[in-house]
Amino acid sequence: MRKKIIIPGLIIAVIVIISVIVIISVFVMQNEPLESSIKLQDSDVENFATVTMPTKSSRPGCDETNSCYIPSKISIQVGKSVTWLNEDAAFHSVTSGTYENPNGMFDSGHLDPNESFTVKFEESGTFDYFCTLHPWMKGKVVVE
Image (cartoon, rainbow, N blue to C red; front, side):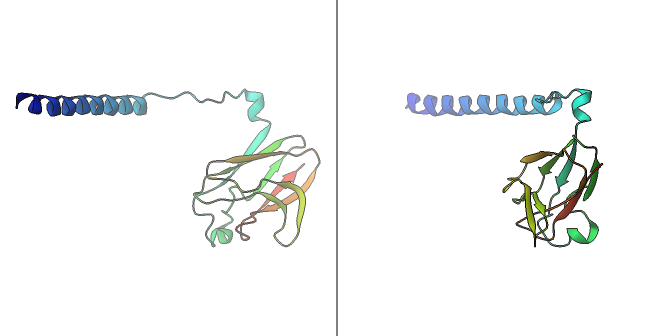
């Protein structure tokens, strides 16, 4: 009878100890600053710009406030890159041209949430782009 009580008691004690260790570990990790896994030099930051696809941009209406891609129009210098980052919960794309007339210059394919896509622009000009899944999502890169 005594063995029947001791074994379940030990199992419960082990589970409680492991739970406490996990909770403490999570708490400590949340309160310690984490270093970025990507180290950027000042010169790297100057070589690209970021455009985000914010939360809920997959829903119609962001086009009314030009907030489907943020910023919806970005200006960069020749030789610089633009990185698009999908911060939405939905899939998106970054495809050159317009929904009615894609031009094939670049196409990210479908970007999962938190995925990114980068294009380096070697020529000056104005480059329209859109999302193949959400035709109201439009943006523009101006390269000078």
